[in-house]
Length: 285
Ligand SMILES: Cc1ncc(C[n+]2csc(CCOP(=O)(O)OP(=O)(O)O)c2C)c(N)n1
Ligand SMILES: [Mg+2]
Image (cartoon, rainbow, N blue to C red; front, side, top):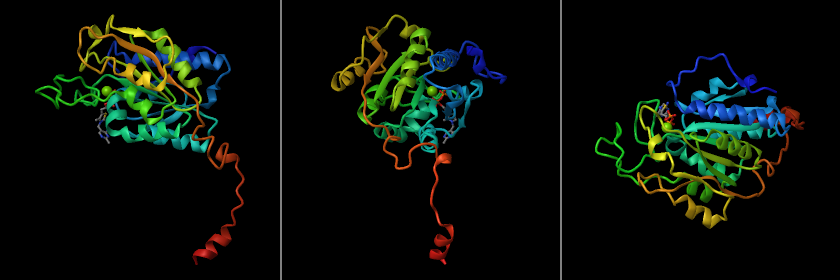
């Protein structure tokens, strides 16, 4: 199949040059490659988004899905997987959505190892609402909610996802399209909860393109648990000019998924249940 089969007719409302276009492009490319490799089926791809600039991606990919609520991508995706584990479910949301409003859901989706992929467009800002601090904003950043500079220690999403039990944890940059596509493919192929943090500089409210340029380097291979956490802290969302910032797959492991352990296996519409509705009604009379 061709990549343009994923195009929609919606008018794209991101700013001209927004790096969300890069994520959109890599996602369509990764989906196309995986469909052509017969790893996944186009009709099974299901996307779930939250609310924000990032989440507008929902309108621009021609697949089934659920345009959800701010912060609620992962429980929605989990519900979809319970209903039909055969679907390839990919969630998209911003850093505010995932690490502020939705942070509790990241904990439990990772622990339970729900077989889905979560892609976080991290621009270190609430962009759609025009520039407030998020949990990954850098110390001393001036935003609309921190006019004297951010004072809180940033959340390290890589270390956090590993500690919570995610079985695939990666970081990519929108400044390296091919590598982003490659890691998206690996994340979707992974059986279990795959988490991908994406550097997505916001041209208007948090433009750190200059900062990131030349500072990222690729990891050779996934690391052991403790080493991966240490590596995650090699850069902790600072403005350090000497920083070397690792990207790639920090950690990957295998254990049974949430769906493996469900009592009712397979899509719900195929499960025959012996329910005597009359008996239930009698019980409640
Ligand atoms: C429960 C709830 N809280 C707040 C909002 C308002 N809101 C809409 S978009 C948004 C910012 C989203 O920021 P982020 O998730 O980082 O995505 P970005 O716009 O940066 O891509 C906020 C706070 C909302 N829609 N729902
Ligand atoms: Mg954001």
